[in-house]
Length: 287
Image 1 (cartoon, rainbow, N blue to C red):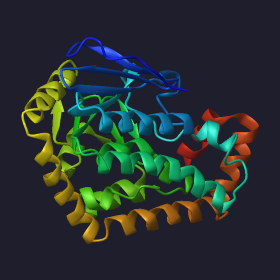
Image 2: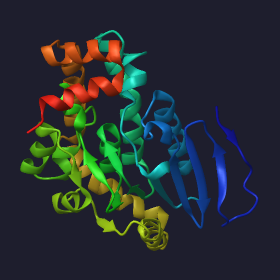
Image 3: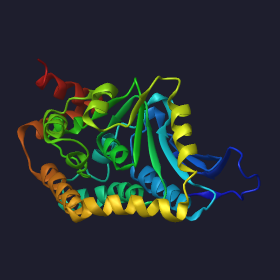
């Protein structure tokens, strides 16, 4: 549940809303959305996806907010979907509609970023994985510091990305590296791949994002969003929306199609817990 505070002190850094999974503040036209589940590396449960969309909706309707920046508490952006919560709850049974409904909620938040008529910046530290990696790429600008590690490690679990944006952000070779090997890449490599706009020193990321936001607030909001919409619409005409929808169905198929690796992973997950099951998976790819 969200409790809104009245805006009394314009221009000062203040908390706009209280959430269970987010910290949201505003200063000088910049809204910071901070993922606040550091005990699970800010991994997304359904509540966090829903609250992210609620915060974006608030930004859309508040004329004082000119730019949105997204980051994570505790030194990490996000580990992506919270598989421990999902496999132990909503996705305990491999039913196609359950997986489809589950990722529709996360995809809706990524589409909210894509469609927001205001600039959205991802500010990445530490892990930025899976669904969070896809969310960061949906932002208009992506900044990271040198601690960032990015990628789609769920591929190692015979999984697939439900918001298939990677082939639209980077080249074919780079997309195949990330989506077919499951390897994580550094911030420097992500910059070379075209995923990031800038790599900052660890103590300079917030200042660099704030500097970009200050520049963006100089534009007339009535017309800036027209350019964003025109760029996004160009990709949509080329098939971006259909690609994402196809990727979602590939995700569903990957999760309901049994194979030896997934079967044993789930057995170990139920018997030994998530950490032990992940360690077993990693042994399969040791070189």
